[in-house]
Length: 164
Image: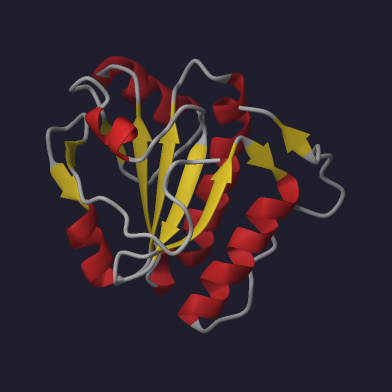
């Protein structure tokens, strides 16, 4: 389990993208709910899970969901990972001694947090748990006042669990 539990306040952060543009959680939350996703490009579970996070982002971004990926590797590897897995959400670099990762109590990737406009953590997930991503989609839809997006395609063979 992540160190920051549901109902607690998410720490703000200011991190750069590879293009040197900076993002903060506070700015993202000013637009609406935000999914914060910690990952590493060398993690096989991250390689499996992040395309599903991208699907969620694509389904809800026009309705107000922000996704901020927080990559624990260098700039070039981050760029290559986003390209290889067709990720379009901002990939931020947590390179200063993993300061943001430590603030969130990350010891396993991927770890995701859904944060509401007030900064409260609404949902957390560690590793890849199929049912948790489906639940996440429902929570996002409920917060945005719209029907839930089905994360998995009919007939898609997706394991129930993939440890991080």
